[in-house]
Image 1: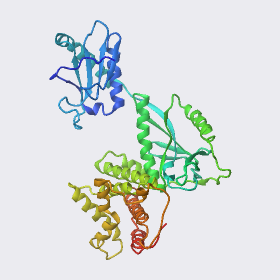
Image 2 (image 1 turned 180 degrees about the vertical axis):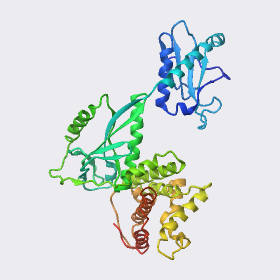
Image 3 (image 1 turned 90 degrees about the horizontal axis):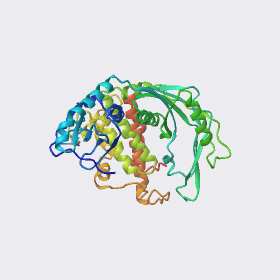
Image 4 (image 1 turned 135 degrees about the vertical axis):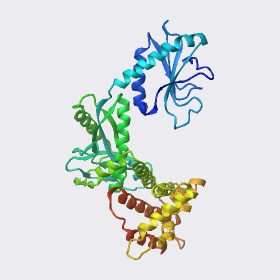
Length: 446
């Protein structure tokens, strides 16, 4: 493809609309379609050329317009400035033609903007399927089987959750011998929702964002790592959900290596606080954003831990703790406030003072190890033996295994703090302190 003419150096990029009117790719495409509809004759379309990053161009091939229209977000002086996402346009071509045709292009853009403002995005239904993240079996030597399912549908925010009467199963290589296989089998969770968008891909992207939050909440609530097994499918008509589900389940239930005997289904009981937690996380306030970031860090950390990357997981868990440092201005203040918050939750009995638990909080958080991983790439767990399931206990113990158990303590602490934040469940420090003491005393925890 021949590169079209670029705007002349110093060319004026004219304002079209503020960022709040076109906050994402879906709305930008919705607006651009109105522009395309008003360009006379056939035209060439493209973008992302060197010199104009994050832009698209329109070059008509008819005689009415001979110049190229460029559209982009951001200021021409600093395209990477996240504070400036206003939409602008410029015209490129011979100087005399640019001068002559810019008013016509401006009229096209303004007419398209008026039509876009009057346009309404459509509600688009979608459906998807969730289940266990297979990566959490990366250290397993046995099958990963979830037999629980919802007995009745559940609503969380705008999402409807239900359990089809079917098994999904597949196989994964064993970490002991990758020519051997273990089974991943589960009762899938079907999630249905509806998003408002101008395009099908925009609806799918919005649905994926909602599914991500739901998976994070399910991981927090159940202690198991959830992920998508079927990405959101935007439905062409309402009845398509059943058709798609039936077709997907027929195929998914025919995957290889299903064990000869599977357990009877058990009830999947989701806690009643999930809808309120969803509402809080999506409220759009500063506090909700902070809580959502902490939950995202927790979800990422659990995924790293269960897939055999405890050092990286420890660093992410530290990010969860620092997420509670909402008034901190520096990295040092964030760490100090995070430890103070942890210490205040460990001092739960009458007469106990938070300052007496500062050292214990620091020991559980392992801030120094986190800094080693983040700044030097240091690894303290079984990563240094590439997570191969080999161990040797001696008079010195197994430092890698002990570190992983300390990360597990940090995991439980972060889970407790988030459950307090999102579900109002008070932190019980006793099991955390006991586990920490057991590790200090050399008690082997498997």
